[in-house]
Amino acid sequence: MLNVYLGFAFVQAAWQVWVLFALYGLHLGMSQGVLLALVAHKVPGALRGTAFGFLNLAVGIALLPASILAGELWQHCY
Image 1 (cartoon, helix red, strand yellow):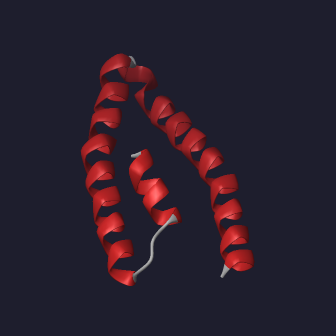
Image 2 (cartoon, rainbow, N blue to C red; image 1 turned 90 degrees about the vertical axis):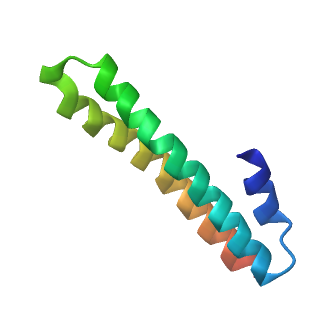
């Protein structure tokens, strides 16, 4: 996955962006289901909704600063 992120940093042409997005989507599609299945399997049934809520909270908290940083970099570099 790190290769895709590094690829976005060094992309030279528009077609390369589309290839990297496809690779990123493929990775996300293969890993997201496994993560959700792991949470569903490890958490007791009564707490499953809470576990999914906390998982999405953690992802959201991580994505907010990452998105802000990406926006700032985009605005200052392009």
